[in-house]
Amino acid sequence: MFEHTSRYYNLPTKTFATSDGRKIAYVSRRFLPAGRDIPIAAEVVVTEDDRLDRLAASTLGDPEQFWQICDINDATNPEALTAQIGRRLYIPQPQISP
Image 1 (cartoon, rainbow, N blue to C red):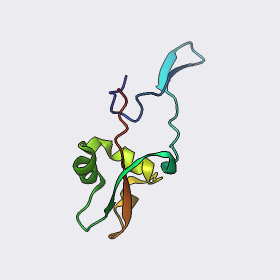
Image 2 (image 1 turned 30 degrees about the horizontal axis):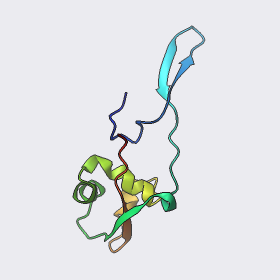
Image 3 (image 1 turned 45 degrees about the vertical axis):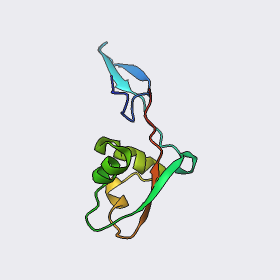
Image 4 (image 1 turned 90 degrees about the vertical axis):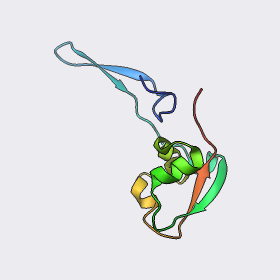
């Protein structure tokens, strides 16, 4: 259902049966990992022009992997990570499933 680079790749698919007998497939909830448990590859300091997708592209090689930076920094709001200039962000070792 999802690409191997997606944060949802390993989540199980479940089915909900409606009262009229229809079956609706959905992906189970993703719980955020504890950032302290994710291996750190680098640390960066946020500058004025930084965006999370650009940081992910330059450090992880793929702008769509921004969620890995969110996970290691325990962030549920991606925009908050680059809102404060000078903030230090952890960059994880890439966590792409095979």
